[in-house]
Image (cartoon, rainbow, N blue to C red):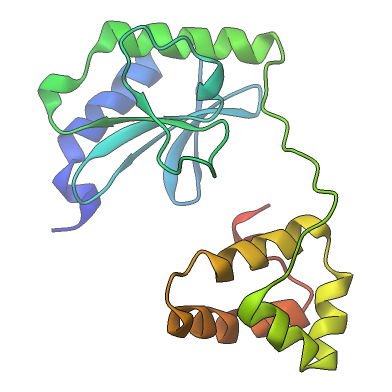
Length: 188
């Protein structure tokens, strides 16, 4: 059973609440249902293997009196907050609408997470070795913005096993040489 079919009723209920009780506009981004206000992402709704959830793109600014939010990637994800659910009974329409209204108010006030500026990065390990041993790769890497360089460095170093780091390195070499960032395919 696919993840979307597993949570179909729950996702349909969430979407109907959002579409009937808020002013948000529906779109599809990154393969999931995303709801926007004046073109800015407010929430996303998606099902996974073990849960379905609502993503508040600038959730870091929400008060969360019910303490429902988690940061799925602590130390990495800065603004996004998830509300994970496991059953239809956990859907609290009143709280959901309240959180969405607060998120819309925050958007109206211009509250948005601004990415931290990267001044420099330290390239170490497998990536450093590959760059120093390949002039074409090194030249292409140096042409990338610091943020793209950081994406690649983090991607490699986050793998615990050296074998995984090497495997990841082989996958990203063509992207680096092509002048593309690790996540460019997901950006518009």
